[in-house]
Image (cartoon, rainbow, N blue to C red; front, side, top):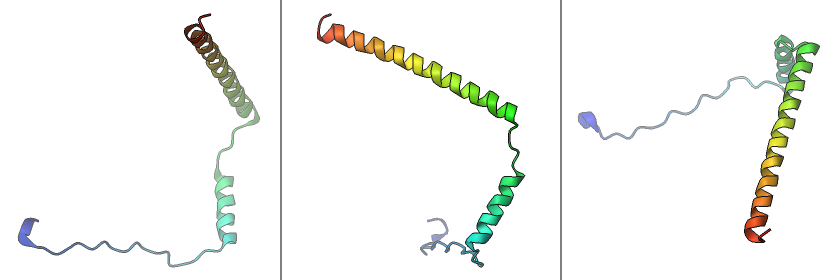
Amino acid sequence: MAGGSKKARVAKPLAMPTKKRSRLTFFGEAIGELRKARWPTREEALRLSTIVFVICVVVGAVLGIIDYGFTKLLGYLLVGG
């Protein structure tokens, strides 16, 4: 080590919370934070849900086509037709 000191470094203990909070306090604060959140309007939620649904259908169709193609390819390679 630099400086010629051979002392081992000791990790400092983690700071422990000084005050124990009750579950009721925790859930009260959690509800308060949820009230502060900006929630989407009905129109935004419907639009975003539609986008997610369409993307799921498209990805499902693409994966289905790829699966069908691999199934046919392996059928030709292993069985011969």
